[in-house]
Amino acid sequence: MAKLLIVDDEEKIREMIGKYASHEGHSVALASNGLEALELFKNQDFDVVIMDVMMPEMDGFKTLSMMKEIKEVHCIFLTALGEEYDRIYGFDVGGEDYVTKPFSLKELMMRIKVILKRENKDEEFILIDKLFIDEAAHIVKIDDVIVSMTNKEYELLMLLVKNRGKAVTREQIITRIWGYEYDNDDRTLDTHMKMLRKSLGVCSKYITTIRGVGYRFEKEIES
Image (cartoon, rainbow, N blue to C red; front, side, top):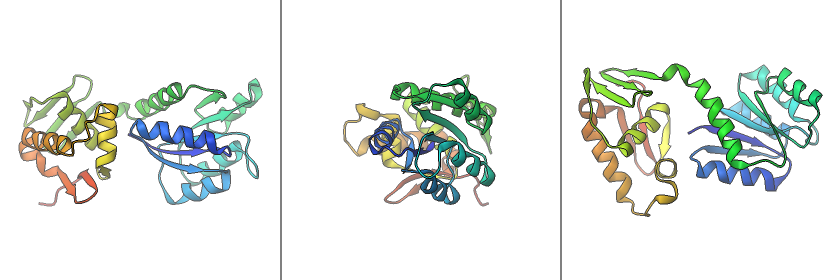
């Protein structure tokens, strides 16, 4: 799950991307122009910005340049332009990918996934107190003992761990783990969370229930 900022002066396009990205489990913020995007960017942290190039008042290239002066961020440019110069300039100002309209939403999500995977490459091995996760091997250990858990438990654990320190809502979890297969039974998530906590044993203390919201995997536990 990533936090995305979608910037496009065409309402239909930004709403379409936002809706699809939300179904994929991402958190989404929308902006209709560069100035609006900058205000959101100053006050929030985003994993990836998906931004149109041709916008009124301030184009995407200028907007990204100003964002980079505030803090680093990954950016995928959207544009109807196809000239090589525009692509090169987009990379020069810090863009990492370039998608020409019209585009496939599925392909766009895959491009986001590639960026995020590259960002998280250093986290193939995760060590939190007694909890060790080898993501590549799909192995979870506690005190060097392998923990047996279902695929859904593992997916739930990884979603929380990857977002440790942040609240993950029930809706975000359901969308990411079950998607369209969800049976609308509120007990489904509760049951799997109970199973996960049981599997984690002493490390279950890291999972905090946020009443009325969802769950958070704590970065640290006070002794």
